[in-house]
Image (cartoon, rainbow, N blue to C red; front, top):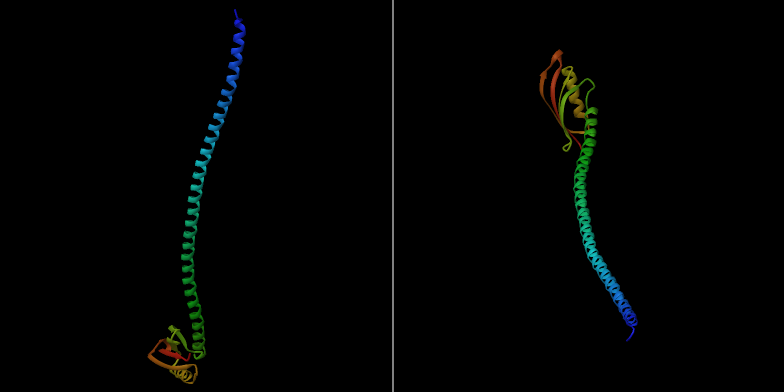
Length: 175
């Protein structure tokens, strides 16, 4: 009778030989599944992050356009303010010149209470008083002799306190 123990040993060897390829196949399939899973995960994550990066880039571009629009609005406001200030500066210079001309053509004893200056026209509407009619007459002579005044008109004569004479003067200066 054959030795049974010997057959079992052969059977075990065959079984051991058949386990190695199965084990290698299992490990290979597992590694393949892990690799494919990792590749698929990385592929989807890559698409997700690329999409998010594009959205962020678009938001940044929109933000730059929005900031540029705001900066343009502020620049327009600043430009308008600068234009107004430039006009005021020019008018102030003209007004200062006009006041100097009025000062040069005014008798020292004549005073003005109020006035409207027309800087663009180079004229002035003044209301004032002179201590006497003689001083007012001298003021009219100064207006006549002044080469800076192209035309003048004295009107609204009246009496003030302590013998003073009230008057209105309309002056037009050469420009």
